[in-house]
Image 1 (cartoon, rainbow, N blue to C red):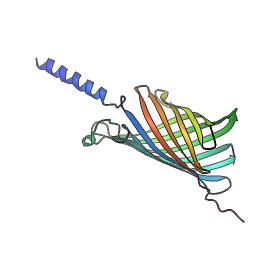
Image 2: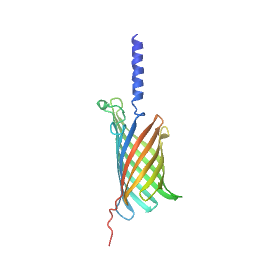
Image 3: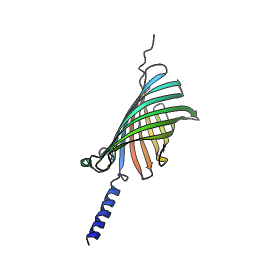
Image 4: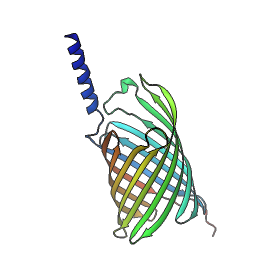
Length: 230
């Protein structure tokens, strides 16, 4: 009888944990991106993202990223940068467990732009070196991982003010299982000023273990901070 009760408890625990991934919830990412020109061929990338398992609550991840861009021409530039990521991997409130993943990340990327009919096309190639610190009651430790990412983005201007933006990005692990995740995105954009815009979009984030639906609200501000001679 004790064995049956123990088995039932284990099965119930498994079912509860299976439902606590947040896969059936509509989450949200609130984002800021900036490209700050500091010289003719140099700019600084700035970025902050606040990600939630639900639209306005249940914290999932904080991502802060910066980098130095070198512009070879208007359609080509490379970036070397750093990112800090603080992740709560549990959907339910399990702060008492101390679950937390801290990551320091170095990345290198190449961006190429071109035009195809009315679409503005952007190819982004990125390599990442990830230094991960996992903190919980059962698995404290650090590890280093390497990852490659490719994003194909297409922007379609509708008017001088409105535009559509689409992208698909695939993540490839350079160790263990190759497939990491895939992100499919569509958004309506508003050009607020010459150097600022906003996007309201939808993201389908696919992992081998599940699919997640996310609303994205992004603000893009690209000031020219370079000193121009009169």
